[in-house]
Image 1 (tube, rainbow, N blue to C red):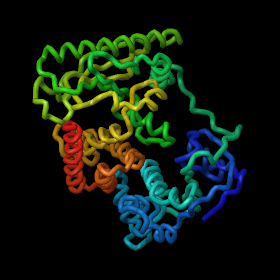
Image 2: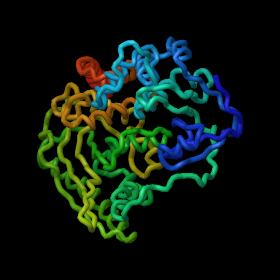
Image 3: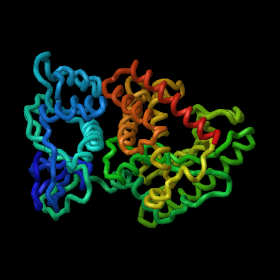
Image 4: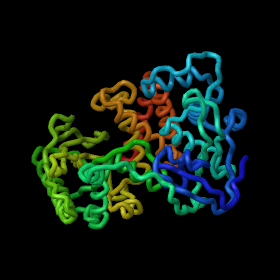
Length: 450
């Protein structure tokens, strides 16, 4: 155990989070990661010191998945070659270490570090009164011989940010490139101020933001860097029942189009008031797997009837595909699926944590066993980069979702599936995915019968 006294200075580069994040004791190290943020502790901070011996002593308190993650990240109880094989499967990099005898060493992969620390915090650190971990300087062939000293702070209210004049200036950029990168943030600013997407609509729609952006906003609001960047918004216009005719589909699609077209038109005017002479392009997405009318009320899987895309076109000709809207069926959906707390915070309708997690998990598991989304398989799918992002998001959310009696088995299965992705074991991934899909359908069926 290590205690940081009140007033101890620590540093972070590339972002100014105050908890659920990594910190350095040397500002020169923090600068390697980006602009410098400086902090002082406002009370004594109790840290768990990570060594091979200390981890092996606490492994008995941890789940199998958390032990596997920590072993990979810190090299505890495994050989360097095993770490290298897993790293090669994840990134495609050639082996760095050709020894079957050497002990494992520190291997830092940002997304896995974050998932491992979140799991370790929930299963051990928080229960035993620790505020985070202290990772001493370690030898590592994976990181040019040495990996620097690091801290991980897991609890809020410990650090106070102080001014620093030693931060690195951001890289130079043109005004046009800055605008392109800022479009999602400007859209969030506009939407939060108007709040027009929060009102309920009398046409039986339950509208919500889904996909990666919803998870990204939620995780960042909880102090977690998702590690899975996304710049587009995927809005679902959900109906609780199956549509029976093409006429019904066209009627509801027209309402969906009118709502979002009006909102994006307002956003274009918002950009022009800021000197950005952008325009909007609108189109219907063809060729994606779309369901036909009918199908029976007993069909519990989601159905997709129409998808529209809204693209922001800059004066330079650069295009930003900003929004997709989908007319979908989510059986028995009601406004209770929407979180008032987080929707008001973002100015966008966001699902509750449980529904957000189950949607993400369905896409990840479906990429192994559902034909229409196997393209997203994170191991060998043509769009595996999207599957990897889904795995990261599902992993983060699984440590936040409440472990109610009816979800415990699903939480365990989701962590096993994320581990399958990390070690690139497709056979086990398919096995656990089938179990997850069956469990999700059972939960949907139970809800539909209530």
